[in-house]
Length: 355
Image (cartoon, rainbow, N blue to C red; front, side):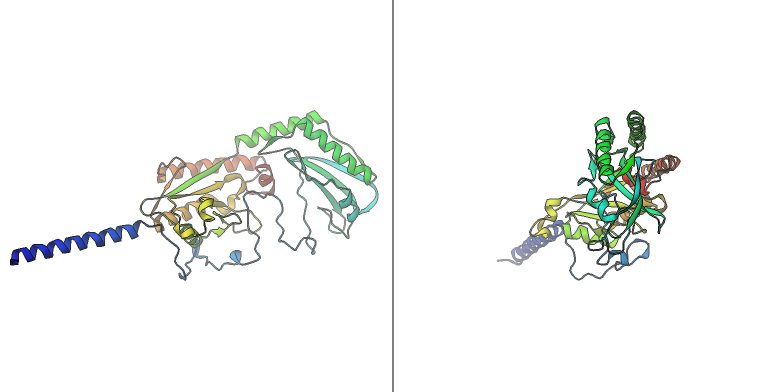
């Protein structure tokens, strides 16, 4: 074999080796990115460390679905008083006049089993003179006055005549068992009020949905969770779901991150390849003072860079600064309209109405 042939053979071998190495590198590069075991914790947005008290055990996990007072498991009745939620602004409210004080045990025993009327929450509250406030009835208390209410509207629609009649029936049965007197407002007037409130809510109910789509390698569920935790998201109770908590721990979450639940439930989730995940923001349920939109965008843009993704709308259209600024301006106008109706975004009343 001549020197030329030897040289050509060596060059051919080097090319083949280079191709094999490139293919291996390319394959590895395009595998789903996985979480790093034992990785050093990084600070969350705004400098808050990952060991912030909000993320410690025993914390109540916020939920986008739960508008009622949150109570840690095992603490109900342990000196915890649940304050009034009923409000004439969004509830049909009636007073039950008692002839004599009644024990909390008697009220609880007389209450209907269901706390709903149709699709609307139903509640009974008791006035406690020592605290001078309305609260949910509890054992060991003596009450001098009661009130019952049913919500006028929620995302299921307005209170209708059938639901109003059921409210009257349940409340009258409760009054009869407690020897209380009750008077009900005019049904047609309350149904009309419910429809007007529902119309307002429908016109001011807004939710924003973003996506972050992979531009290079796919992601494993564990990798998404790890990156999301670094910008402040906390694991949710539902697989494939994380929440961005508010600074006020009594409030619900500011936003939700979610990805394919089947991938999260996979026996070996590191083998699942995901190309996108969603960021959801329920405007009416997040307090304006928390700057939820700005915080969500900050988190989204940090994820976009760290994960080599692209922020898009639900259809996959990339979102630029101009569009994002336009959305911010529209949000401010919506906040003003909710404030003018005494239904400030993120307030208990707003979270109840938009539920």
